[in-house]
Length: 431
RNA sequence: GGUCGGGUGGCAGAGUGGUCGAAUGCACCGGUCUUGAAAACCGGCGUGCCGCAAGGUACCGGGGGUUCGAAUCCCUCCCCGACCGCCA
Image 1: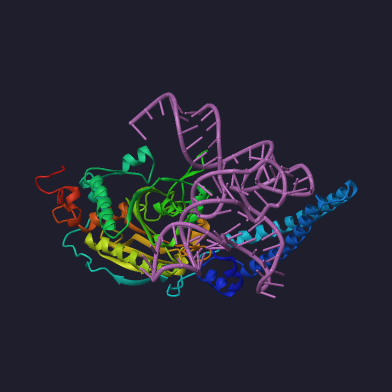
Image 2: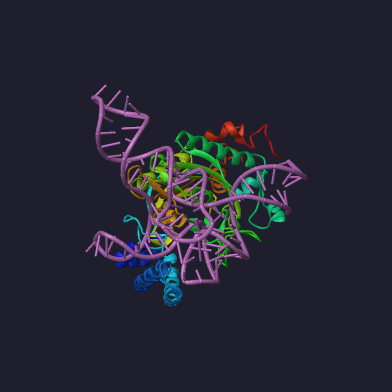
């Protein structure tokens, strides 16, 4: 959410921001309603004040007759107040609907436009690999080495679910270990989070927990939802809290399963592991002071690059355009890894994403910080970034590390956990 | 699943119809004292909204009700804790 006063004082900027982000919102209508609301509020308060004066005078009334008269006066004032209050509430509801639909403001460097307008910032140091043999995609590779059971997943849970097997399972664990080890060295606190969260936490982070277009699975008869990312649980962890400014920044890395309905994604890149209903993710999350969030955002992006550099994967970094930011993000960087088996002759595919949500989530979740010696509290800034989304990282690894003899090299950084340097090497034949 | 106990300011914790935005302690800020610090003592110290200010108003888990008046009484929902049972 935005600061209401900010909207009133910067109506044009907010309106323009909505247009750039492709959000329909009538800001002038909002300003009108909100202004009206405030006027009514003042009237309500004035009548309340009068009623309070009357109430206090009752104890001092000279006799019963006067007492009754004053009571009647009080009753009438409260009735007047209730009528005005009802009017106020009605208008506030309409204003609130607009208010809640407003996206965050946008970093000045973010390119305007839709998905295609996102700007490439740089490429990683690893070159995209050239193959001297016909390239297989991750589904074919996984099948060859018995790493992935899509039919089994479908039988048990439906399309979009899967079993990881053998080195597939080992690679998932290795990727988790690799990411966590690296992040702990960077000062992140490792946490394993709940895989479910309450509705108010889910919506506080900016997801829509229920309804026809929701991306979120919810549990029947409970106010619980399967999380779409640990961003939800990590952000929710401090909801309602006031953090001592000395403790900032707080850097967490959380492991969770992620569940997504992928409603409306029918027909889009559904092959294999690219778009699935469940995967495991190591997520970075940071709470910072407002003045530190831009630098932290760069830091998270650098860490994502470092993780993929360490895996020896080629990628590009995108500054995501306004139309593709979603509600909470002020700025978002995506890493797209080179996936040789994607499309015709390979393509980049999104593997990580990091967002600076400034105070937008903090306001909804009510996460503040307090500085010693300073009056009052302020909202923290929240940031999130993918360290490793296992399923997509697996695609990139399998496809980039395939060899002419059909085997798959295990990236150097993962060997100590996978326990071998090659999948399907001679003497380790799967067939 | 059962029984009981709770949700009050940054924290702890009083308060059961008006004089309560709310005792007290801790923490924090300012001051006195001191070479300096600690201790002690004195003073200050919740948040939103309106207002230049004075001040006003709202907020004691959420919602509703009773009343001239509710942190306090009633209803309802949510959450937390303890113990018992069951269980990986």
